[in-house]
Structure formats: C-alpha cells, structure tokens
Image (tube, rainbow, N blue to C red; front, side):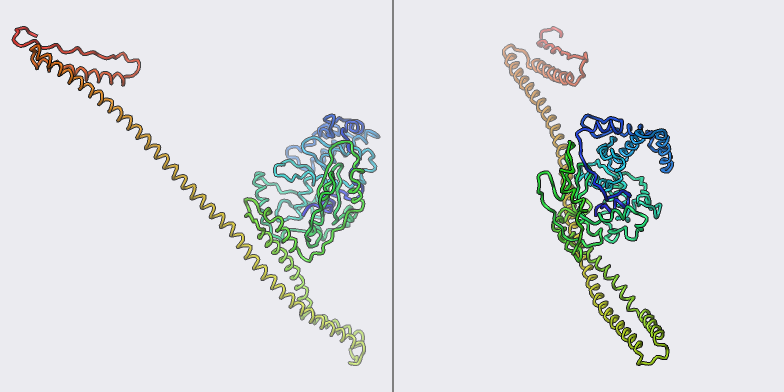
Length: 592
C-alpha cells in the first residue's frame, strides 16, 4: 500500500482536483523574490529564501514554542503576533505579506525542503492571488513526498509533509500503536490524532517498528479504513472523488511522478492482480518512474504535455478481474522471493517458498472470512425461528387479504401458499448451498492447516542450518583459542630454553678457561722440573711455586668475574697478588 490522493484529501483537507501545480521554472528567482516579497535569495542561481527572514518580515520571528507552552497557546500567541504586525497594512503591503505567508506555508510545510531555507518556486503561481485556491496543492504534496523519499539506505535526510505519513500509518496499521485519537469526529482527519511520545532511543524505536512490521498479522492491516466516514461534512472529499482509484501522473513544478494505483488495488477493496511495468520509451522520460528536470528556464506545460493531458483526463480507472490474491502472491514470490526476507530478523529464502506459502495462506484466510460471512447470513435465513416468523407474517397477510373465514378455494390464499412454497424451496436451495460452502470452508481450513505446517517446517530449516553453522563457528573458535594458548606455552618454554642455553654456554666458557689454566700449569710444571734437574733446586720448592702460581690465577679469574658483576662507577678495581717468594735451598744457613 502507498499513500494515495484519497489519503491526502481526507487527512490534510487540501484539494487534489483542479489545476496542476506546474509552469515555468527559472535559473534564478531573484527578480520575483524582490518584486513580490521584498526579500533576497541566498545566491545568484538559487530559489531559496532564509526562513528567519520570512518569519521576521511576518512578525513571527519568535515562532518557536517556549518551554512549557502548549500547542493551543503557541498557536494563539503566533496568531496574535502576526495580526499585530499586519493590522496597519493595506493594499500592496497586505498582498506582499499574504504572499510571504503563503511562501512560508507552501515552501516549508506543504512542499518542505531539507534544512532551514524555504523554496520560493511557487512565486509565479502566487502572483495572481485570486487563483491560488484553484491549484491541486494536495496532488503536488504527494508528488513532492514521493520524490523526496530516497530509495537508498545511505540517504538519511528526507523532506516533505511528514504528518501525512504518520496519520496514514495510524489508519492503515493501527496495531503499531503510534498514535492516539483525541478528537473523534474532527475533520480533516489530521486533527483527530496525537502521536504517542516515546522516550526510548531512536535506534530502539526503529528496531521495534521493524520487528512489528515483520510480525504484524494479516488481519490487522486496514486496507479500506475510511469506510463509514461521513463525507457530507467533508466537501473537499466529494470534489476530489473523481480522482480517487485511478492511475494518474502527479505534478509539482519540474517534478512529475506517476501514481500506480493498480499496484495497490486492495486499498480499493479489490483483489490484487499481477501487474507488469512499462519499459523506457524516450531518453528524457521514464514511464513507470518519476522524472524531474534541472533548475533552468523551462516551460513544463510544453515539456510534459502528455502527462498534463493525462491529468486533465483524470488518468485511468483501476479495475481488477482477479478472483483472489493468490496469483499475485505467487508471482511476487517468484520475482522477489530471494530479496524479501533478506536481513537479520528473517531467514534468507532463495527459492521464495516461504513468501509463496505466506501469500497463499493470506489469500486462503481472506476467502475463509468471506465464506464465514456467507455462512452466517445463510444460517440466519435458515433458522427455524426466522422461518416460522416469516410463515406467520404470510398467514397474517393471508387473513388480511381473504379474511379468517376464507375457503381453501380462495385465489388470494392460493397465491400466498404458492409464495410460501417458493420461499420454502428457496430455503432448501440455500441450505444445500450452505452445505456445499461449508464443505468448501472445511477444505480451505484443512489446506490452511497444511500450509501452516509447511511454513513452520520451512522456517525451521534455515534456523537449523544457522544453528549448525553457529556451532561449527563456535568449535572453530574454541580450537583457535586452544591453539593460541598452546602457542603462548611454547613461546614461554622456548624462552626458558634460551635462558638455560645461555647459562650452559657461560659454564662451558668457564670450563674452557680453567682447562687452559691447567694446561699452562702443567707446562710450567714440566718446565720447572727440567730447570730443577739442571740447577739442583729441590722439587718441593718448585712445587710450592707452581701451587702459588695456580692459586694466583684462580684469584685473578675470580676478580675478573667480580669486576664484571660490579655496578658501573664502582671504584673497586682488581688487586694483583704478588707471587710467593721461592724458598731458599736447604743447608745454606740463610733464613727466609
């Protein structure tokens, strides 16, 4: 479903019939802004006027609602300020202020823009103030809203008259609970509603709306919410009725948008048929899609003559020969089944089986409701009490016609008896049809049960596959964690081994040093023995000398290691030990 011209006229009260909102667009609007408004545009090639400048010129610069100020008081204060500012103005000054006010309302409210500036492209249509009410501003509002709603998720800024979308959702999707009806019976319908203030974060609200849209029951969607409305109190609805339920091109200056009402036939109380889109025909025109021209001097009454003729002919009426929505659901599932349920909240369905089954289920539910209404009606007609009441009325009518003493041969009585027999026959036929329809209803209910079971099975398949995938991912993560812990342990063991290897190398160096010292000592021993044998010195004195030399070397080695361990800047230096003095030869009589 999409907002339509009927939604616009009922909710806002703006007219959707009359002259289309189009004309000539210009490269710069500086001349008409200065001439008609007495203001300036933002740039040389611009159609925007500062909102604050318009508010100051109207005397409503403080139009923002003050702290603790209600809506009624706010409107009253702003109205008083505007009246005080325009009370002393007449003639051209009053017309200028009226154009300023209309520019602010049309350029910022009805055809709102992003940001603070106000569009003044409507000025050429405001030059003749007596014809302003003849334009279809409601149709322009819908065209501008369609063009402003982006189709990309990267577009976060939108423009347009948002209360239309809000109230439209209140009526068509009431189970969302986003609005509260405060003023029953007020028209336009926009005055009846007040939005529910939600203190939760915007991200949380969007998530909840997404979930609600995915799970909303089919029966909670209001396709035709305006049935029963009193149109007598809404003359704008009667004027716009010839444009309801039609495929038509909408115009808003240089923007031309198609309203494909045949895509939402259910909002007209019809069954939805399978629809194919037209293909591109011209380089500048995209039938089936909106198109808009760049801001330059262009006469759009000539550029889009074909679409303007379509508006003047009031488009094309939407009809549907479909007996149910089942074919539409199946065609939709075949074309979009792999895209509809993509996301985190619903499983991916490449074959479109879930979408197809849900569509068939919804169609079956709708047929069941229709059959139930017929069953209720037939049950009332075939009720014995009703039948006896009808028979009693027939007898009373017979008495009134022929009197209580009329004979069996009375022609009036015969006619009444014939009518009663015909009524009984019709009741029997209706009862037979009731039995047949009851059997069809039972078949439809059985089919619905089977479809629900198939849907549950299809929903469980993606969930089981996702659970298996999550389990595999969890096992892989656990294995990765174990491998990481094992790597850390191996790194620690390698570090310990490197430390032990360094210590072993140090011990090996010390052993090599001691072995070299022992080798030198052995060499000295051999040398001393040879000298003793030649000089006659006792071997004991030579041994004592060699022992002292070996101790000296050990002391030097220990001193060297102590010096290496000593902190930098220490004044403690190596101490040289003097070699022991040799003993004097025995028998010389000299004392050592």
